[in-house]
Amino acid sequence: MHGRPTAVLLAVDDLESLEETIAVLSDSAALRAFGEAEAEIARGEGEDLDSLTAAMQARRART
Image 1 (cartoon, rainbow, N blue to C red):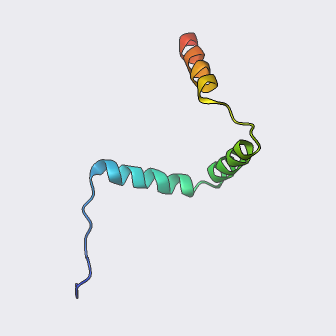
Image 2: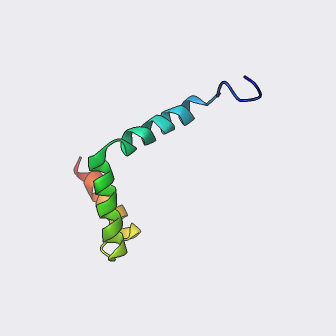
């Protein structure tokens, strides 16, 4: 109306992604966990990709 958009067309995948983002950003516990994870990474306490890959492969092998 009056030169302004009145509708938006989104792919289903894009809409679902936006809804998931909103859900995560609405979850205070998840936001705290993200903040803690970022602080750990900043302190150099994170795991490297090889360690994470090995841990995931070991976990899959157990199931």
